[in-house]
Image 1 (cartoon, helix red, strand yellow):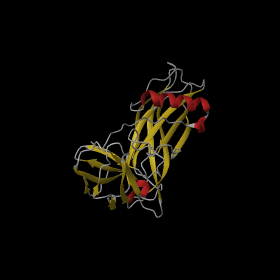
Image 2 (cartoon, one colour; image 1 turned 90 degrees about the horizontal axis):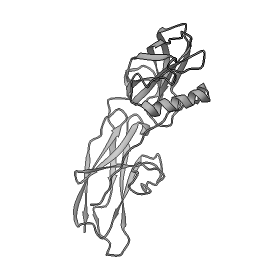
Image 3 (tube, helix red, strand yellow; image 1 turned 90 degrees about the vertical axis):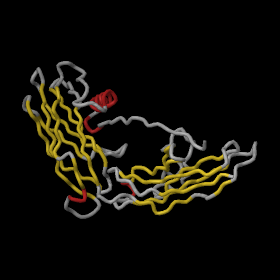
Image 4 (cartoon, helix red, strand yellow; image 1 turned 60 degrees about the horizontal axis):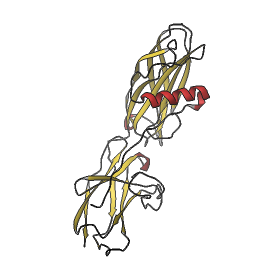
Amino acid sequence: MLFRTVSCPWRAVLLPRFGSALAIFVLTVVLAGCDSAPGPDPLDPSAPRIENIEVTPDVLALDQIAGEGDTVTAPITVSADVSDEDDDLTTFFVVVRSALAGQTPLAQAELPIAGSGRMQAVLDLTISRAESGRFTVSVFASDTRGNLSNVAYHVIDVSATSEPPEIVEVRLPDRVTRPAAGEPPVSIALIVEATDPDGLDNIAFVQVIVNGGTSLRLCDDGGQGVCNAGFGASSGDEQAGDGDFTLTIQLDSNNAAGTNTFEFSVVDRSGLRSATEVRTIVVE
């Protein structure tokens, strides 16, 4: 076998704009229940409660929204039931976050609450036409004593266009020779030049399936990232963000001779996949 596989982690969300105490609270509840709806219980039983969150629209097709340039703005309406047994509600919070990890909120709102009932916020969501994917809407509330509610979640599915990404070129050797016993492994770079009608930022990942089984990622990270964590220290990519996605594999003296098949494809943030390019390497 030539290859090994990998696994994936979580992402925590901080909202520093609303103050350190609130940021700590939001970090806690996201780690506690990032896949739940309406969310984990409040930290205090007398704290406010959020239920029945709705987002309209919850599907956006960016190529159907009028406007020119690299960004598009669309209004979204977020509503939820807010209640509090002490009836001392103060603020209704809404935060919309990008599908891209580590980004600042795309939209947020803070509205005063007169009392328990149905709350609604209308936000202008401005996003890059290349920034498609699944966006997270978070809703929570506070009262006069500083108690914070549970966090309720909803998602907005955003698609850029109906055009999939493309593979421009695949570069790898046709044949390689195994090193002799005791000699160091031979490094083999697999490189895919990829493009997308909505820009390189819309490419979610470049994939290779080896011999019909093992699936690995190629990285456009300048050799600094870990998109194949557990598969070696570096992808071997030469320049980050240039559209050349790289995976470097090692061939040693114990590898079997024969033909190895590599199936390459590119997937964008709305799930569209390129045509598959198939290549082989003969190990001698």
